[in-house]
Length: 356
Image 1 (cartoon, one colour):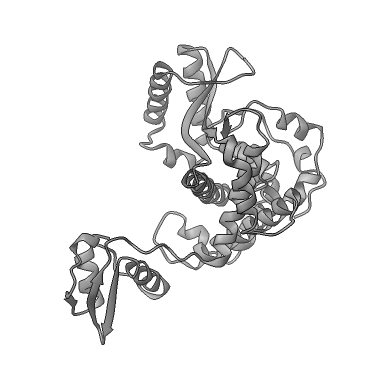
Image 2: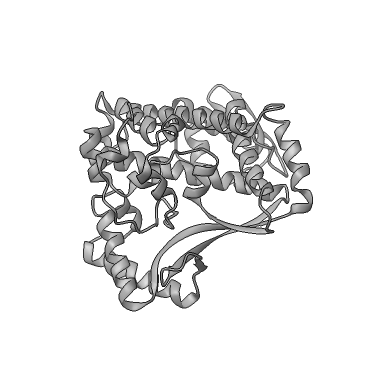
C-alpha cells in the first residue's frame, strides 16, 4: 500500500478508486475485508455509501490484531525455540531449518528423507509426484515463514541475533564450516551451470519438478570436480543472550499454557501444524487460480491425498515407529530439507508398520 498518498479529507468515490490510488489489487469477499482491516491500521476512514472518506492518517500504524489461534500457534513455536536455546551451553548455535523443525516437533522423522525420494514415495503411496511436490513446496514455504517469524519475534525481544548462512561439509569431516566467499562463488557457478543444462532459470522451478534430484546430484558432481566440498545446506546462525533468556522463557510460557511440560507443547504444536497444513490444502482446492497445479488441486481427492501425506510425513505419531534404517538416518550429516544432497534410495522398509 502506498500509504504516503493518503491525506486527511480525501474522498474516494468507490473502492476501485481507492485501490488505484493506493496501488493495490482490487479484491473480493474475505480478501477485501482483510485488506480494509489492514488499511484501518494506517488511517481512520468513514464509509458513506460507496464513498471512502479519509478522516485521519496516523503518524504511526496501529499494531496488528492477531487472530487468537494464530497468536497461540506463534507463541508455541517461539516458546519451543526459546526452550531449545535455553538448553544450549554455548552463546551461539548454527542449526538448519529441517533440524529445527524436527526438534520442536513440527515434522516427523520421515519428512526430510522422503522429500529426497519423491518417485519412490509416489510408488508407495499411489499419489502422483506432482501432488507430492506440491505438498513439499507449500509446506516448506509455510515452515520457512513460520520459523523466521519466530526468530524475528525473539530478535524483537532482544533474546537473539540471527542471520542465514551457507554451511559446507568438506573432506568427509563431521564438523561443517561456514562457506567462504570463494566457496560461495563456486557453489553459485555450479548451480547456474546445471540450471542452464536442465533448461531452467530458477531453483524454485526445478524444486517443484521431477528434475530436482537430478539437479542436486549434478551440482554435487560439479562441486566435487572443482573443490573439496561434499555437500552444502542453508542454516541459521543464532547468537543467544544467556543473561536474559530464562526470564524471557518464563514470560512467554505465561502466554501459552501454565505448568505445561515440553512434550505437551510439542504434541500440541504438531497437532496445530497438521491442522493448518490441511486447512491450507482445502483453501488451495477451493481456489480457482489459473496455475500449473490447478488440474491437480481441483480434483475431488486432492485434499484426501494431502491429508495422507500429512499423516505420513508430519504427524508425530509416526515418530514412534522407528527401525534401524531410521536411526541411521537420524545420524546422517545431511540436515537441510531443501538443500542437502542425499542420494540414498528409499525402500518400503522405511514405511513398514505405518498406517495411513
